[in-house]
Image (tube, one colour):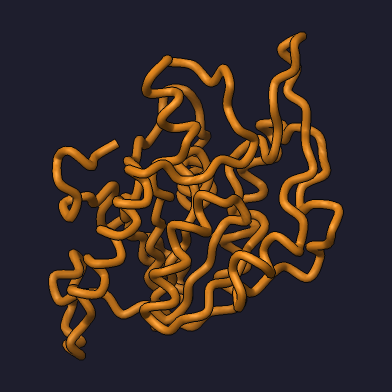
Length: 239
């Protein structure tokens, strides 16, 4: 089973942090910036121009292209908008996995610097803006989050749930794209490789980057083929 972890393109919060070095003024569920939209288009063009030609030889670096069978996304706007047109052009359904969201969930900081959980987008937002997006059955008009700020100790177990879902619902030969987030990537790897995620072990990935991890279901052996592939982005588009 091939897993392609794709970080969303540049968001408004990413740009804000790049400018100010902090998250003051952040949006709880930011959109893509103009740069992010261009990154998402470059990612789409890359996949369209690098589709697998039917060659089944061992191809650890995807030199023969990509042949996705399934696509999943975080429920956060920046991830959906990164994957949406790719799924449409490749004629694949895009399905929301709630547990692919970024660490913390939907939240903002109040004047006392407390991190306050917020509702998140309602079901009608997704139906209107992304017709055909496969939603989680628990989504309703009250917002998909509606919880306090997610504590750190809940994040690795959540990543384990995603891995378990993939193992239970996919075959050995499936090629799966996950549109998600940089922070969650670290929890995902720590759960998959069974190491203790900490400030001393962190994998940095750029916006719109591709990372590939293969899992042999029969033996549950995981192999990292590459991390943070962004060669398809020009230097001016790397964030």
